[in-house]
Length: 88
Image 1: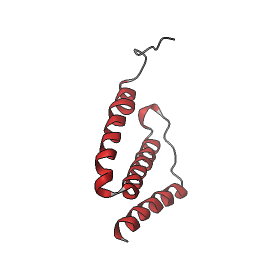
Image 2 (image 1 turned 135 degrees about the horizontal axis):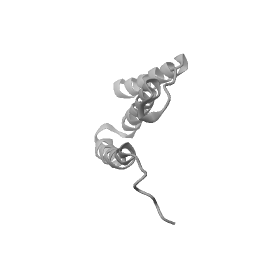
Image 3 (image 1 turned 90 degrees about the vertical axis):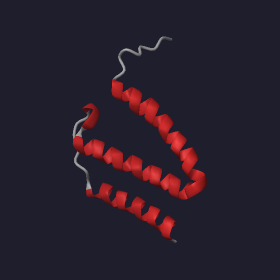
């Protein structure tokens, strides 16, 4: 099977390749310092926050989406989890 690399958008190369490698590297370096709980929650919070912004703004060729109040509550719950793990 052949792969057509010419049809892949530039942002897919950056998002799927470079940022993925960066994420794994930072996760591996930060985990021994901050602990797995805080590292995982901050990573999840970052992904949810970025996806919310992408949906809201309609970035990368997607249609803008209305962010529901439940999604904001979800962000706050994850953020509260980070605070609880760090402070308690």
